[in-house]
Image (tube, rainbow, N blue to C red; front, side):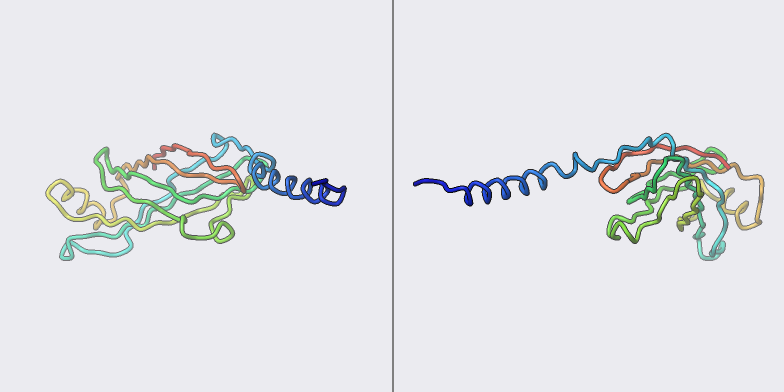
Length: 165
């Protein structure tokens, strides 16, 4: 069987498309520096709850600043919150089930604030902190540590962070 010039062109075109699909992530990779993404704790405030309910809902606000040259986003931010050195709780702010175009955009040099709700359950260990929060005390030393999955169009990297308020 002789392969004619039309078939050679067709096989070449199919091979080119297949190679483009296979190597697409390598061709369009947009590397970024995760150290140029700053995640800071900007506030922890009481949303709802009382001593009678035995739980408090706290609003945790994080400010993300991207100093890379292009827009980034996140799919997940996992964090641990501490008050006066004692652990308050852990939570995850997840956008994994949201399409990329619906996730928060971190534009270059424009801070973005994300909020999350963390529930603090009453216990003997948290009784003192519970009272401080209910009395709107401002002398609580808040600290947060965690990691965020920061993404560009085709690249994702983990960013560890720690911040105090």
